[in-house]
Length: 114
Image 1: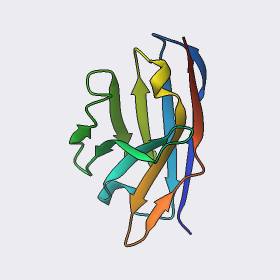
Image 2: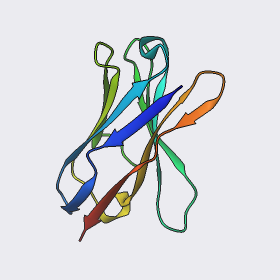
Image 3: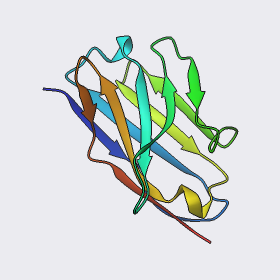
Image 4: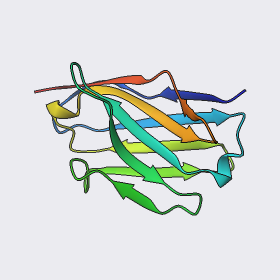
């Protein structure tokens, strides 16, 4: 079955950095568009970034220039490098793929203190 497992979250001060990982199994990883979403307390889940099978990336305006999405198809893993973190980046971060059905990981908590 499809499994997405996020890791790398934690507590960081404003201006700090974190690198999230999403390990995928049960899909042909290299063929799929992969996405990061996040959900802050009391808010709806929002799209953060996407990366195509060929490595083309797109970002939400709120993270553009600070976050970098990447993938390693040999490791079936996607990454999100987050720099210059702000308190408003505090959220649970999820990876997502659609192989005909939306698949989600369990999420990893990112907390940015001011």
